[in-house]
Image 1 (cartoon, rainbow, N blue to C red):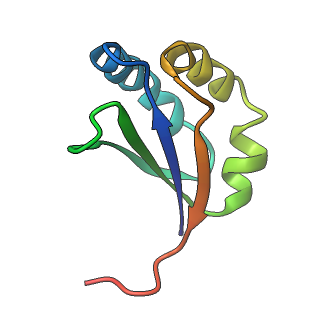
Image 2 (image 1 turned 45 degrees about the vertical axis):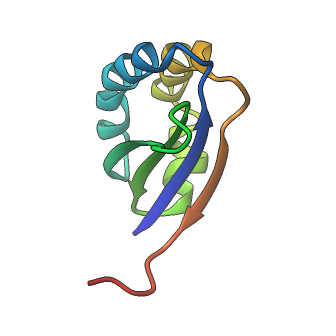
Length: 98
């Protein structure tokens, strides 16, 4: 299992709108081939900073399959207007869990 972590900086004052947009977009992720779930986390010290964490079977399920899909285009149309900058995305896997 791979976790995509997208660090997303939102335009100040648009946080609640962004959260609603992500809620609308969540079914797009969940319907995507290879997606095992997603979570959105908001920063405490930096409330305009979010981390979208999406669990994928493989990196390719995200970078190839999902990014080429209509679901990805719809996600960007919903959430993109609230981005202060392009998201920073990385993929990680667990090496230790409790």
